[in-house]
Image (cartoon, rainbow, N blue to C red):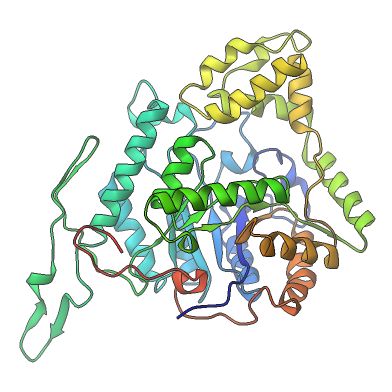
Length: 444
């Protein structure tokens, strides 16, 4: 059934403070232990569900330093948390981050398939390759996988997981008490995969859900990242500073999907969006400025600055000397695309290390800041201009999320770009994505 194209929304939680928001936990309206407080997560999920959001999005990483953001230092494991949310909500999609670098395909397939059944078809997998190079030390490795290996593993990992999700055909479980037949063995299939990175026999010991298989999300702005997303993902998580940037990425990723033989309408683009709502546009900008100053500090920004560079220790350098270009080597197996952008910018602008850190933490006025009317209009403009299919809304200060759900959502509904009731029962149905039927090769 063809649905009218409508704006999709995800709630992206950062608990007590993610990157660049170290001091978010100081907000008295937020539990100081929000990142490990299941009651807080349940409240956020129910707020999002009441506002008819498509999903809640749980990010993750598995390496920390004392300078890591407060949310990273102490947070719940995504699928454990999402299982609690699955029985606390009825409609909301449940998307969790699992790395392909430090998980086996069989375990990933089984855990996500379990969440999909528990939630009755609302699970999603955010596929990441782990940019934090220090993660290797937590998994008995001396070195992190290099960039090409990480993406090669990721592509094969997703292929294997999808193959395992095809272990059973839809009607494999007969469960006929009269005849005593529980399973039709002709509808159970082993995978017998032997590849460059993985060897998995199968089959998976869990049936398919009502949505066929979990929805696959992917983020990555490098060439390898974009290709992986275009080939394997259902939804792309990205960032765009302007409507023009959004349109350029949208055209690129949809074009790559076509090159992979896919229907571009079956690949959604949902960038992250930080939203501030005020009584007037000027008031909203004042709120944005206030929270930027309250949530940031130079000292904490300097500690976090090394993350893109494999947590390189920048405290060893003279802050007022030229930016240390040699630090880029530390990023080879980390977030190299972001690190190179920072280093190139510092070189081109002649920045000192202090200036590079200050430039990175300075306030860049957001695209979705203003009165409720302004925010709703801009979101609708981006959607109608095909810069996005939806947004993942950063959940930060509670009063701002309240204003968004209570003031902006009704205006989006009045414009006809956002649902007024949930449709279907699964995450795929609500996102307008086809339900993958059984295919022996793992396809749709």
